[in-house]
Length: 533
Image 1 (tube, rainbow, N blue to C red):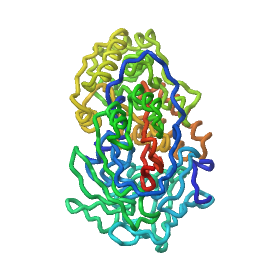
Image 2 (image 1 turned 90 degrees about the horizontal axis):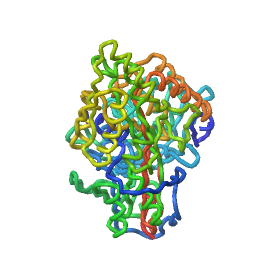
Image 3 (image 1 turned 30 degrees about the horizontal axis):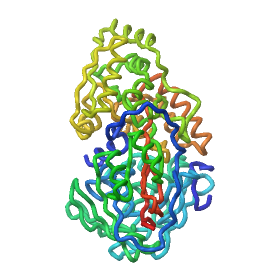
Image 4 (image 1 turned 60 degrees about the horizontal axis):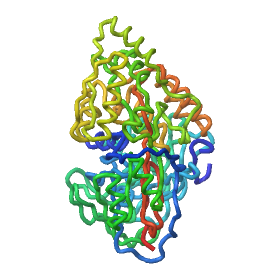
């Protein structure tokens, strides 16, 4: 296998940050009124892209969804818009995801190959690469950083430790990964947190310093205000096109568009507001369009003592919900409604549809559960924000129409939902999200559904599903992966871990004169070649 790797042959703070990035609320800000319908663009680059700049730009300003609290890949999950862009700017990545081809291509790595059996993967590093403190990025540093990441339980660490038997430096520029099970999509791990190599001199705890091999170094961080990075003249791929990067987090997608119109920002992250995204595209701002599959969902607590411990109740909830109606209330019909795990726009969409809207079947199942003693009560957590409240009221009315009594509890902010749902797991049902990225379908489903996953917020446990997750991990090639995903969707429909209601649109837009922005996995933007023309 060559240095270009495709899926298969053709292909604490950690928890809180991961929950926000992987399964955030369906909408990041209120939507505007509209009666139009639209067809979303294809996933990938949109609009007329400016050329890579030839000169230097004093500063680029990027408004993201949330600033990373700490620039440590073991503590901030590497996801676009919520820390991943900043992490990549400081640490770079071993591999980059090419969304056009579905391949993982070398970045800090020179190559990644596997033996014929797929049990041993060999990573070759680019020669002469250094960290920002001047020390070499060698094989020992890679091994130490990956071990540190797993010790600190970074996102995906449990999946790695279950599958990877050993990580060894065989010479100064070579790292060997020996796997104890088949995992053709293993390269995806080296495009995110495991592939963001922390220098040995970074330290730990309060003494930690963000020292990486990326194109920028940290200048200043003011919590909830800004993070300022400066370019490295000695970066392995040449001095960055922008002397400084400034990361800020405005209050939402509409605010990012308005700031672009006044030249207040150069790059803006828009998520979950279809009208603002379409307005941005209509205004001619180029960018990168992606979807977060199952980004909007009704999360159901499956644990004992909760109504959702009864599969009949879970199935009744799913059958009672009409995603089209929910979408009309939440985003005026401009979004991507649906109960399947992967949207029709997704590379991983299958022929198996999600649970249908069937209130009569829902009523029958609920009556059965009530006959066995269930009182029909559901406590439902919803973010106190206009579009989220509209979704919550729509879901409440649909469920009450089949016999549930739904009590809405308002969450003041996304942090309250994270704490109660993803950390304390103290809820019956909540409107939030699951979040399945195109680049990492296995990792997303494994962490969400596995009985042994610490990130399994619903408490769902099913040996048949665990077996299918193992089959998905071993799947080789897009067709095999989609085949297993169809089996998982079928079992999902029968057992209903939670209820997807929509996929979420994401658009990272930039000014028309900005070029050189390169997307990678989970919507992270690589910015070493980005600047103004």
